[in-house]
Image 1 (tube, rainbow, N blue to C red):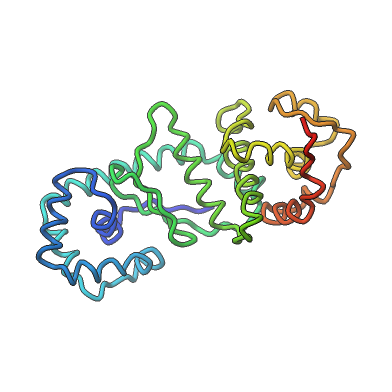
Image 2 (cartoon, rainbow, N blue to C red):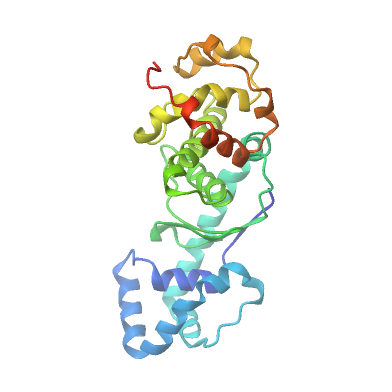
Length: 271
């Protein structure tokens, strides 16, 4: 997947204006803008999707607010912080590119579009995915576990590039995306099993799916025992017919398979 990490004035200003204010000085700037340019401020809110979809050609209908912010001395400081943060995120992404490519190419197996990451001030505490191919990044990288940032980015990318399912099937989608990202991808990144990680409400469902997940990954049946020991997930191997076609599917097709066959996959007496 090709990526761009950019600091774009319009995207940065929009998020400064409409995300929660991390510092009092920003709150004061916003309050003053609101008091002076209330109508223009409201109109600027509508620009979000246009910026995300085509930032290169974006021209605001009214650039009053943008110009005022650009001329404010506070903005220079914020933009420098965003540029510094951009380098931090790029370094983390590039360092783990091999594992991320494995996730997308070997596990997800779908055509993911080129992504533009709009880097904003990390103090805003936001990761936003308004449209496919665009994501706003503005959240601190955890110094104790920087990989959490990659998990959140990857979860957003995969979830938003898979179709929307009916309410009754949403747990299957979420569980399988977790298997891909929070479990398989995380295992590759950490060089140890992370298969017990993720939402506790989905753990039982993921355990039921797990035998078919191994088939999806193309793990030979004779190696199942090794994986069960590694991941601390057990099942009776002999009770599962090996579905050879699963390893030819992409992640969305695998979700469809599991939903179609959920009456057989969910076995209440499973250990």
